[in-house]
Image (tube, rainbow, N blue to C red; front, side, top):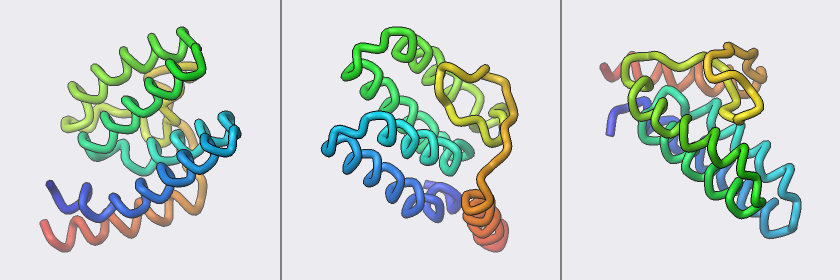
Length: 125
């Protein structure tokens, strides 16, 4: 596991935990927003990028949202193939209602986390 993946893990896991909590409370829309947050935070890590898309796929299947499910299957393949070569659009939320190649603004709190983690990664590389 590279240092970026290791250092971003607690932040991604926090969003995934919130997604689980929201899902258990029946707040499925909020649950997906937390999955999107986890995607933005983890998309530069192949491990987290693929895992979050997998969790989005599970969410879509549970919601019987076949458009989202198909979109996530495509995104899983893209995450596997393109993350390591920096072929992902920054800030993209990972939802199938957003273009695969659309660069999106990052929430300030997430940008701060990503910057901090990249500094840690660069200091250990």
